[in-house]
Amino acid sequence: MSDGKAAQIDTLSWPEQYRELATQTKDPRLKTFYEAGCVAPETPLSDVPFVAVDFETTGLDPDSHSIVSIGVVPFTLDRVQLGGSRHWLVKPQLPLHQTSITIHGITHADIDKAPDLADVLDEFLESMAGRVPVVHYRNIERPFLNMALKWRIGEDIRFPVMDTMAIEAYLHPNRKRSWWQKLKGQQPISIRLADSRRRYGLPHYPPHNALVDALASAELLMAQVQHHFSPETPIGDLWL
Image (cartoon, rainbow, N blue to C red; front, side):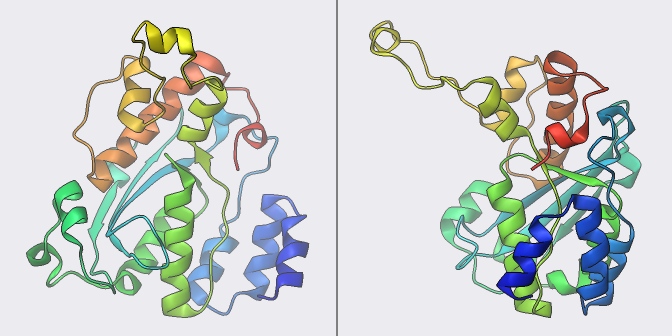
């Protein structure tokens, strides 16, 4: 897509973007994804179908690192639909780094016979279709997925996200400690996933498993809405 077309699409609402992108994409899997549509911005959160998404990667730079596992958990504000959750190990196109193995515990043996992301793309996009993705720190999921698709099909993907980390950042704008707080030994407010969950009394889950982190993000959004917003809040007020 040219920069001019991309700029034009950016001016449209998300439902309009999906309709336009469905006519432009050459990949049938993306076409099916966009044709599933997107809820209108005025839709109350209580009526929105969500899907929590998390990736484990070989590093933090999408230009030089790759996705190694994917977790998805569909949910609404009322219920986590664990029966629809999915978890895939995928073979990265770039080698594993020892530092990433230490973090997420996925080893060379684990991915030796794992499929390429292209082999599970149908299932992954199907799990996202018609739902609003929820992530904790959108600068991982969207850039890594875009890079993975450009490598494989020569196209990127567009979708709105609910970013639970961005919501915590909004709720705690003054996270840096003042000199007085530093003097008293007070710790800065953390908006990392586990620390954010702790503020809402949510249980501790072991980190760095894509499926577990997706579930953790889903529960965090549900708690954020309960404590700070309303089920009637329009999705357009919070998505990015």
